[in-house]
Amino acid sequence: MKTSIIIPSRLASSRLPEKALADIFGKSLIMRVYKQALKSKLADEVIIATDHAKIFDHVSALGAKVRMTSTDHISGTDRIAEVCSTLDSDIIINLQGDEPLINPIQIDDLISVMKEEHVQIGTQCRLIDDVDLLFDYNVVKVVRDFHNKALYFSRQALPAFRDIKYEQWYCKTNYYRHIGLYGYKRDVLMELTKLAPTPYELAESLEQLRWLQNGYTIHCHETTYDSVGVDTPDDLERVRDIVLRETFH
Image (cartoon, rainbow, N blue to C red):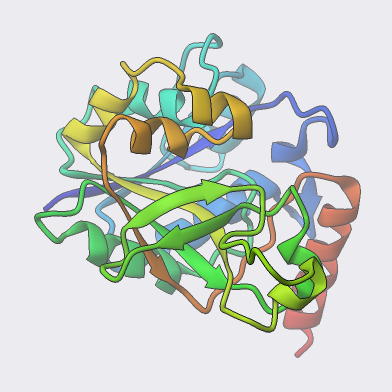
């Protein structure tokens, strides 16, 4: 089964302008993501999908495979679907363009799941080991059935306990945060882009709820890997610190 990793990358970013091109010790953020993806042992190709000539020119000059896409896409899913429509791949991996420390083993773990015939959509989750994350609305939680299929994603802490205080929930069960790395069977991805927004999606601002409400299954497997997404200047400095420590370790 042919697998393509597609990395959506936009230039516009309200909290960190032009973050895709931010310098991390001589390499841009987007090229660090691309180089990590190239280390995957199971992917056949890696493609950057962008809507801006500045990113296109930058990465193509460095030898990256890149496609220009429409500027009208609302989500990264729509952006990678445009590229996907021109490919003959069986599996598409959506790797966020702001994950410069992504571990290639984590990518391959997802590809392995996607190679199973019955899997339509795949993603990952990680055990929450900090109580503050449990009640942080920026951290998306997921609950699953016994077969690793997602039942629901939420910004709220799930499951909720009826008869005990919030601060005691963390000690009563395991909670999992969603890791935003996605895999799709090609045909499924093309179907997803035709779906209209749904009430749960609009309430939680979570695109994956649109897929669940329309009856698609999302296999969500646990990972021990934890990457650092870059959304703010503080995130960028954190990544720089990690890279610096690893360089001189």
